[in-house]
Length: 520
Image (cartoon, rainbow, N blue to C red):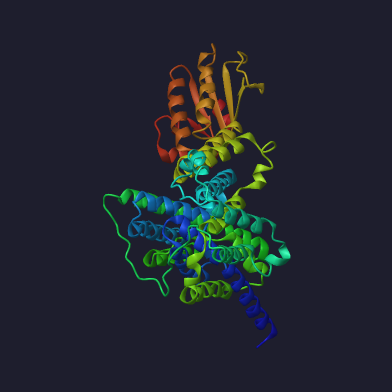
C-alpha cells in the first residue's frame, strides 16, 4: 500500500473516530431536547451521517442533528401533539424538497442570502436552545417555547433541584475550562458526559435521566399524512428543507476555506435530502452539515468520505452494544452541553461590530433575531429577506438620477424656464419599480412649465428597465402628449424591447436612438 494511501486512511480513522466521539453526546442531547427521545438523535446521526458522507458533495463534511434543525423539529412535534409519525412526514417532505433543490441546481443561491438574516437567525436559535434548556439544567421539566421559559423563569427558580444544578454547572465548567491539550485527546463534551454521569451514579443523585434506549437497529416506520394538517406539514417541511440546506451549505463553505477545496453544492443538497428521507422512515432526528464536527474531523486528519462513514459506523456500534450505558446520563448534563452549543451558535463577529456596522443591516439582524426567539422561525427568515430586499431596492433607487436640459446644453436638477421651448430630460441608472415612481413624478413637472413645446426623454444611460417602469413611462408619455410633442431616446437594444411589448405610446413614432434626430 502506498504511503500516501496509508496516511489518508490513518487520518480518516482518526478524524472519523474523533468526530463520532464528539457527536455521541450531542446526538443524545438533541434527541432529548426535540422530544423524540435520545434514540432518535442517535438514529438521525447514523442515518444522515452515513448517507451524506457517501452521496453528498463535501468530502469531509460530518452531518447529523444540529441545533436549528432540532428546534424546528421540536416545533413540529409539538404542533402535532407529540405524534411522531406525523412529525416524520414533515421530515420526509423536507428531504424531498432538498432533493428537488439539488436537482434544480439551486445550491449556489446560498451566496445570495444576506448575512444579517443568517446572523439574526443563528443567534436567535442559539438563544432558543439556551432558554429551553434552563429548566433541565436546574432539574425541572423543559418548557415547550422560549417565551414561556423566559416568563416562567422566576417560578422555575423556586423549584431548583440542587443536585441537578450542581451537575449542570460542573458540565459548563468542564466545557468552558478544559485545556485544549486535554480536549484534543478527550473531547470536553464526552469528558463531561462520562465524568459527571459517574459522579451522579456514585453519589446516587436523585435527578432526571435519559431513561431506556432501545438496543439494536431502529424499526422501519411509515410517516403519516393528515389531510387536516397538510398545509402545516408542507410549511414545516419547507422550513426544514431551507434551513437544513442553508446550514449544510454554509458548513461546506467553511470546509472549503479550511481544506482549500471546492464542494459540489447541488450534490450536497441531494445527499442531505436522501439522508433526511431515511431519517423519516426510521424515526431519526433530521439534521444537516455540522460545522463543529466537520472542523474537528478535518483537524483530526480526515481527508476523504471515509472519515464520515467511520463516524457513522462508530455511532452504530455504540448503539448496538453500549446503548444501555447511556440510560443513566443525567438530563442536567445534556442541558449543559446544549447550552454550550447555543452559546457557540451566537454570532459574536457581528455583535462586536454593532456600533460600526451599517444601521440597516443591524436593523435586519435584530428584527430576525427577535422574531426567531419570540414568534416563529419561518416568519423571521421571511421578514428578514423582505427587509433586506426593500433596503437594497432603496439603495439601488438612489443610484438613479434625472437632469433637465433646455436644449442648448444647460443641465440642472431643477427645471428652469430657459431655452427655445425644448426640454431634454436625461435619465440615468436603473429604472424599475423602486425608482420609476419618484423619477416619473419629476418628469411630470415639465408639463407645468409654460412655453415647453417639445419634450425629449433621454434614456440612453438607463442600464435596466423593468415592466413596471415601462408601463409607467408609457402612461406618462400619454399624459404629456396632450400638450406637448414627446419623444423617447433609448439604446437600440432597449428600443427593440419596448417595440416588442407593443405598448400604445412607446411605438415607432415616439422611440429614437439618436438625440439629434429626436430634436428635429
